[in-house]
Length: 69
Image (tube, rainbow, N blue to C red; front, side, top):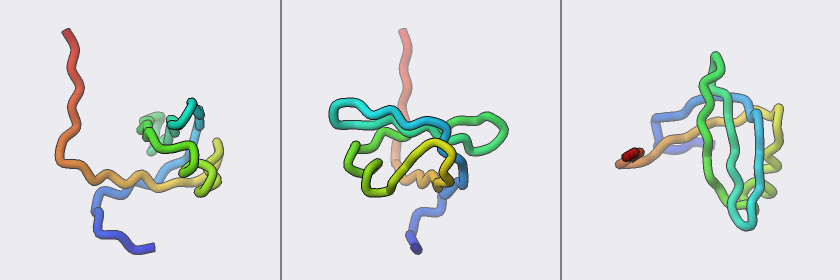
């Protein structure tokens, strides 16, 4: 598969937690650094994502925000 996004990071799935409609997929991208993606349960099923599997994190965003008080 070819895509235009340049921010592609190879990793290993360490956890998939499904909620009512959305799942959190945790991917270890090296040395214990974890990126968590929120995707639909349907996408998890379609991609057959499970712990131990290989995955590529693809980042295509204009903003990433975190705030605390």
